[in-house]
Every structure is written in C-alpha cells, then in structure tokens.
Length: 202
Image (cartoon, rainbow, N blue to C red; front, top):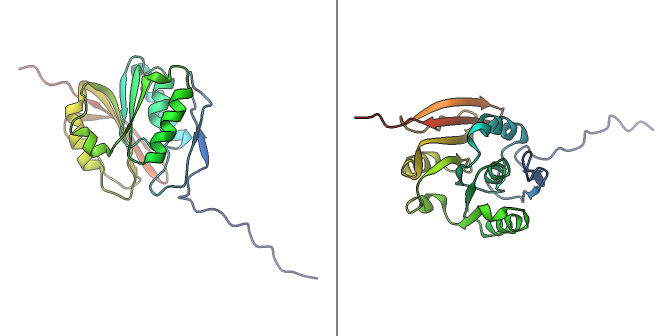
C-alpha cells in the first residue's frame, strides 16, 4: 500500500536552548552546565566561546571578571577555568543563581566564583570597581545594552576588556572610551571584544 512520502521529523524551534552545555577549556573543562528552558536564556554557542577565549587567553591569568547577565554562568566560569583570579556572576533569576552556587561549590577552587542574585543594572550602581574583564550578554528581548554599558564604565579598570554579545543586526556598542579589538558574527549574534583606552596624561 502506497502511504505517500514520509513526513520529515519535526525540528525543535531554533530559539529553544540546549538541555546542557559544557565548559570547554581550562581546569574545569567538561563541567556540565544545565540550560533550563527560560525566556531570554541563550547561552553563548561553543564555537563563539572558543573564539572569544582564544582572543582573551593572554589577559586572563589573574584577571578580575564580572559576568553581568550570567544565566548558565558559561562565560564567567569559563574565564575562571582558564586562569582568571576571580569572577562575580550576577543573575536575578533565583533558580539560576542557586544552580550557579551549587556548581561553584563542587568545583576545585570554586571559591573564586561569587554568585550575586540581583538585577544587573541595579547591582552596577553600587558594585565594587577595578574589574579587568566584563561580559555583557543580556536577553535579546530587552534593550539593556545601552544602560548596562554606560553604568559599567565606573566599575572597570583603566585598561579593562569588554565583551558584548547582541543580536546579529544590533549596533550595541560602548562609548568612545572603548576601542574595538575583535568581532565576529553568526546567523544569530554579533559578538565583539573591546579594550578600554587609558586616560591621556594631562
């Protein structure tokens, strides 16, 4: 009996996050990070993370890092895994923040990771200063880049590095104090690394 051509298997929506990702380099390589199905939760793709941390590797040893919209913690944890001295992971979702604390508590040297349950923009108003590297990768649905990028300048070292991830066609760029170092694009995102310019001597 001719049943006609078979229907192709349904594919999950492209925006649906994977169930888990892993730290891809350093001391904690292979550590599993769960990715629950949450609105706006979109972990940085493995290929993009590999490229980014190749760019960052020379400056990571001893760096103080903040991951402003931590989510799965993939960026902040990867940085510490690869040699950063410490990282602050800021996440407002209670369940995600608790999962980050659980992961850090089980990692050797995980005390170098501080998890702060807070709104990133509110936290920036009273955050400590002197960070060497800041990750800004907020949910794409909200226009959070401009406010975050303006607020973090007072919290960064004079020669800090800044990673910004945004929608492919977005022009989420920091102010004039930052010089573009490297950038790339996928079909979904633009990712860019900036270096802060030291203030000119007067």
